[in-house]
Each structure stands twice: as structure tokens, then as C-alpha cells.
Image (tube, rainbow, N blue to C red):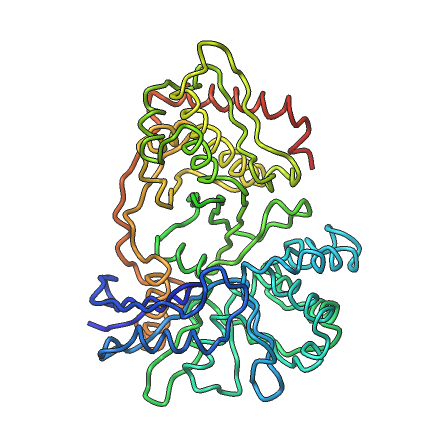
Amino acid sequence: MGIVAGLDSSSAFTRIVVCDTDTGAVLRQGYAPHPVEAKATEADPQVWLLSLGEAAGGGLLEDVQAIGVCAQQHGMIPLDGQGSPVRPALLGNDKRAQVAAADLIDALGGRQPWAEAVGSVPQAPQPVAKLRWLARNEPEAAQRTAMVMQPHDWLVWQLLGRPARRTTDRGAASGTGYWSAATGTYRPDLVELALGHHAALPEVLGPSDAAGTTPEGLLISAGTGETMAAAFGLGVGVGDAVVSLGASGSVMAVHHEALVDSSGLITSFADATGMHLPVVHTLNAVRALRGTAELLGTDLDGLSELALKSSPGAYGLVLLPYLEGERTPQLPHTAGTLSGLRRESMKPEHLARAAFEGMLCSLADAMDVLRGRGVEVRRVFLLGAAAELPAVQAAAPAIFGTQVVVPQPAEYAALGAARQAAWALGVSQGTLSPHTPPAWQGAAAQVLEPGEELPMGQAVRQQYGATRDQIHPGAFDS
């Protein structure tokens, strides 16, 4: 039996899982918070190392043969010629680069050239937009920037003792805005367009490659971003979609090729296995539920109980949940809409049902964006605390029109990082193929089938779509 570790350095904490290489069984875990504010948009990278050391304390990594690292995405660390940060890292939740992203779109001649170059259109979180912001707002720091890394790249580099070779992986690289998942190559000209001069970029490793070995003989795998690691930890494959229910929402699927999308609706990431992860985001998911719950003087559990007292279609009530504007469809300045009010529908349970159906129909719209580009969806993994709500589980299979899997809560990103470490270790030992990851046991889950409710789910979607198209005609016209 071999032993590997997976390390997840998120925006708020570091979590480490130590696993058996053959089965993926978790043997022990470590955890430490990051000593930064939860909503901070900048961080000294050293705090990630301090948190890592605390999480790994007490001999947690004893007998571990390999480590995989995943970390928060879209962070950008500008380094000088000696490898020291020229300023604190800019984190993924930093929205200051919105104007910079728009500038870059114009500078290259519009959305289509960007989509063809790197498979995505610049957005504020991406490192390419952060580099443009740095050049415009902190020109001295920009001028000193000789190398650009992301959090997982930097952590791997530190674990290896800051070698001359600096690496990343396809997953993290695909979120930069200057690496193409379709061609597998960097576009250094886009870095220069953003920063104003050349900067060195990490070598992009393959899914089963090792980044190196520590002086103590500990193998460090390529690492990846949190999204890619979580998908790998869940064990999703072609035909699977992952729907995440946070305040905002996202639909991500596994696909055999990178998608070029000039509309900006689809962000085409690479995954941790050699495949691709096209993602469509919505600005409103659980925030629509919370808003409705507050309006009705209850909480999410109470809202779920109310909704189940109503019936599919909510007596004609339709909630378009665009409370913060919307990204899918692209309606940044709109507001939410409640339609279909009649005397018989003006009851708390019908409004509650409309909130759940509106959220799920909005996410089904996002899923249709992927299906419309040839992405196959036969099964949906539903993630987030709200996935446990009975009203969500009652409506989701019929509205999505497919089997829904609700995995038990687990540290899927850290597990994915550990699985990658086991893969790289097996390849180095000659026991695993570089094209076939270790077959770890899949996530324990509740499986829900659409069954007899499928026609009713289709009717709910038709009702929702008719209302959406009446109020926002042409919203999904590209």
C-alpha cells in the first residue's frame, strides 16, 4: 500500500487529506485557516505557506510518498527577476480589473479574436485582466514583473525549494486568458498586450506528470486549480455535468474538446485528466432562495417545506431570478421578475415553489447553452448545501430532464489533488499508465431519477421559458 496526500489551498483555508493510493480511502486529515479576511482581494502568498505548515503539523505527512496541490483559481502573483513578489497576490474575487478586461477585448479587436485565440473572452478575475490592471494602475510594479504565477504554481514551486524550473498544469493555465486549451500553447503576445512587456510563464505539465521531487524524495505532482481537482475527486466523466448551488450558480460538464465561444457565456477550461471542462455561470442561484425566504419570514428549510405544499408550476407563478442582473443570459442591468399573479396563486407556498423552480430553470438554461454546443449531459451532479433541500431534490430531476446525483459532502478538491498525486506516483513507478488515472471509488451519493415527473418538469420549463422570452425577447440570441 502506498500513501499520498492532497492539499487544497482555498481562499480561506488549507485542507490536507492523506489517502491510500489503491482505493483512495482517507487515512487522516489536516486543516488550518488562512490568517486573512474572508473577503480580502489581496494576500501575501507567505500566509498560504504558513497555513500549509500548520495543517501538516503533528506528523500528518509521515510516510507520504507523493503530494498533489490544488488551489484557489484566478489568483495572480507577479514576481521579479529573483522570484520575489513585487506586490501582494491579486485574488480571484478582485473585481477591479473589469475596465481592464474591456480594454483588452477592444485592443485585440473584439470578442471573436479572443475566443479564437484562447477559448474565452477576458473577464475581471482572469490573470490577463489583472496584468492589464497592474500596468495601468501600478506601472512601477508592472515594470518589475518578470514572471507570473498562480497560487497552485507558486505553492508547488515553494514545496520543491524554488527550482529554476517552474511549472503549472493545463487546468490552471486554461483560466489565465493567455493559454489555449484547444492548441495547448501559450499566447505570450497577449501577456505583452496586457502587461506592456514580456514575462516568463510556467511550463505546462500533462495530467500525470510530476513537477519534481523534493530533496527528501517526496514526489510533487503537477497540481491544478480547485475546480479541476474537485471534478477529478468526484470522478465525473463524459456525459456528466456538475451543477453548483452557491449564492451564484454554475454548470460544468466534461467534454472531449475545447469550445470556442465568442458570446462569453462559456468559459472553456481544461480538466485534470486531459479532457475539457466548459463552464457556464449564473449570477443568481441560492441568493434567489434566500431573498424569497426573507420575504416570507422563514429560512431555507422553511422555504423548502412551503414549496412542497404547492405543486409543479406553482399555480402559474414564475420567478425569473435575475436579482443581481444576470450573466446567462447576458442581462447585466436587469432585475428579477415575478409573473403570473392571480388570486389563487397569491399564497406563500406558491411563491416558495416558484423560487425553487426559477433557480433550477435558470440553471437548466445554462445547461442548454452547453447542450447547444454538442456537450452530452446524461447525469447531473448537484453540489452545495442547498442540494440537500427536499424541494430541490423533488424538482431538479424533472426540470433538468435527467438523473441527478447528490454526493455526500466531502473534501472533493483535496481528494482530486491526492488522486493526481497517486497517478503521478504510479507512472513514476511504472504501475500506472500516463493515460489512465487510478480507479478510486466514486463519491457516495444519493441518486434521484426524473421518473413520472418528467412531463411535468418539461411543462414547468416551458412556462418559465415563455415568461423569460416575453419579458426579455432574444435574451439567448447570439
